[in-house]
Image (tube, rainbow, N blue to C red; front, side, top):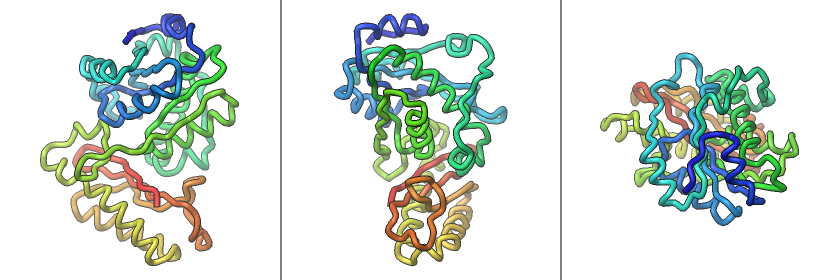
Length: 282
């Protein structure tokens, strides 16, 4: 595996290749990231991963400075997975000057759910992803990039960004990987203490129960069922931001006539000091 730090070195390394397969990460890798790398390998002629903790997507009160950085372990995992190129830029490589040009996704998709509770988050995500795409795919006739479904809203925003800018990049959504008890794998799971780790699975259980309740009791009762799910999780000591049923197509609340529409249950809640997110398609 070749490790490069500058954009020029990355482009030089990728020059012989026509279809990069790319996985963007912030490091602290787990099996979910490695599954994306494994899925990327047969889809391109060179497999590229990036590790970059993007300051733009963190609010001032969030965990940018304490976000886990596990460089040596990450490199070992990527090399074992057969990654060809690791792009690990410094902040000055990605943002050599203040990033005044930014990508603003549409409010109706980016300012709901995660965007409501983390204002500006998707501007930071969209901007750095666009910049990483320009680093990896510049001059290439085509490429593919893989993003996990655990960040459901994020991968939808990125896919639409690629469509609107007519980028020659295929966006592939990888299924969420879970621990044996059902907890979605996440870099932030490492913040949980032993007691919290045992409790953490109840977010996915709450989403499953909400989805089943909505399907069984029909959409007109959706808001009441969502409120009950929030109350039940709060009673266990969580601080939920949302547990909600949305249409997969646009993440808007389903209408009473949408009974046959594909839907997804999404949730975000804080357990102790750790904020976890998850979703289940129903």
